Image: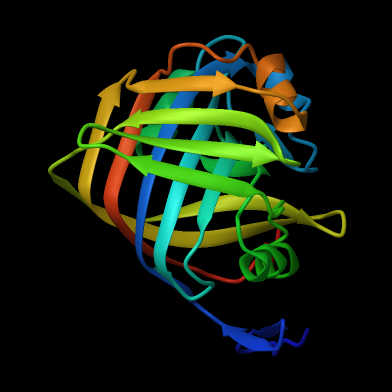
Length: 247
């Protein structure tokens, strides 16, 4: 692996990765759930980062399924399990209302607990460059006119199936967001920008089925499966990722 201080460059499996890392097209859906903040805190071990409470004792967990079609890191499938977080000590505004407003304005960041993918190159790149918790697993997508279904297998066993309502006619303007990771025990943040066409958002709209294995067990510890608070769909998403920076 090699990197320049002024223009980071990484060599992964004999291929050079430069910044920004661009996503030209992907299809993505995400379901967001209200979960126990205490249970979420046990799954967010990064120093300097805290789970954002949007209601007393309640936090937000997002489960997303992404079908990357045209991406600098390849054409691959991905599942994300993430929590909404903020740097510890950051101004919060009015309790709970401040967190909700920050969420609506894209001011809350995310901590990704699990990020399985189905190809080795993006797995190695994600781990080495950003500290993303990627592993290589089987991930299947099925598309219908009204719904899309993503099934994740962990270690060869069914871990979860997420069925999401499809559709949306809005354009989502590019927005800058932040995700937090730990690289060799040091907290880092990564800025990324994302926008979409065919965007839709609705209350509920998701069906989650859990199987077996560590990911399923952790989701059960959060009180899942349950009704989703909301579901978002992006038929054609684009964006780009910057290098990770120390927090």
